[in-house]
Amino acid sequence: MLLTKNQTSVGMLDKQETKTRALTNESSLAASRNAMATEDLHVYYGDNHAIKGVSLAFPENQVTALIGPSGCGKSTYLRALNRMNEEIDGCRMEGKILYDDININRKEIDLYRIRQEIGMVFQKPNPFSKSIYENIAFGLKRHGMRGKKELMERVEKSLRGAALWDEVKDDLNKSALSLSGGQQQRLCIARAIAMQPKVLLLDEPASALDPISTSKIEDLINELKEKYTIVIVTHNMQQAARVSDFTAFFYLGEVVEFKETTELFTNPSEKRTEDYISGNFG
Image (cartoon, rainbow, N blue to C red; front, side, top):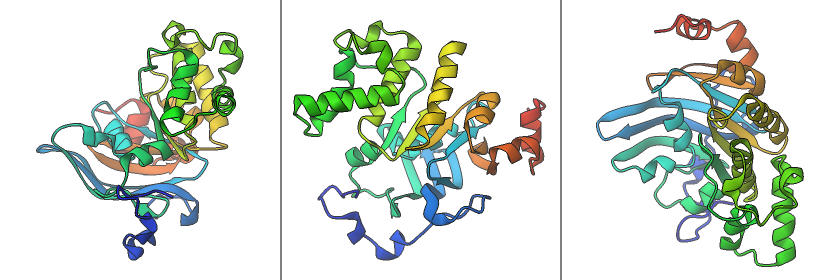
């Protein structure tokens, strides 16, 4: 359970608020199956209104893709889900971010715990300048895990989960920076899942990779959704079609349309969505 900064159970917060569910997506999935949601979420950078009242729900163990032109707010919205935007000066957020039935867009929420349960992988691989082993063990140690056997078991499990174990098992003391770009990105995914999150946020995780590495990342996403709820930002519509179950089309900080991926790509309801998908946008 998420805790506030003073270690008060979040369940002791506003009881009425904990019952709130986001039911704004066009699917018929029951609200109880939503891992996360936002309700009327606004993000501002100073006077710039970057996200304008977005309400979305993310079904458990499904992949939701966020697509749209550059600068439309996809990454800003993704970063809002685990409150990463607050590290940027002048940023403020309004509205609800619901996780585990709790509005986590509150000052008293423990952000360190939030980011443990809602992991994030960025566009460019960012491994620590440490060994492969330490890239994963470092965070675990910070959370109090000390036993060598327990650490090794978690490191192996995480690397296997990221489809990297067989490639690095004999070189765990090797610098992570010596890995290829695709391997580094899979290591970053392993580092994220080592914390045993419930949700994975992926911000264009394959945009800097070659086609072979991209294919491995996409295969990995399909495997990971058995254990995690995944939200992925991608500029590649073919990739969205390959890996996602649901897709949201963003434009100018708003969600134009949100549907099951197959339906959105084959039968969009909005002309702007159709124009974007067909390449006639802008």
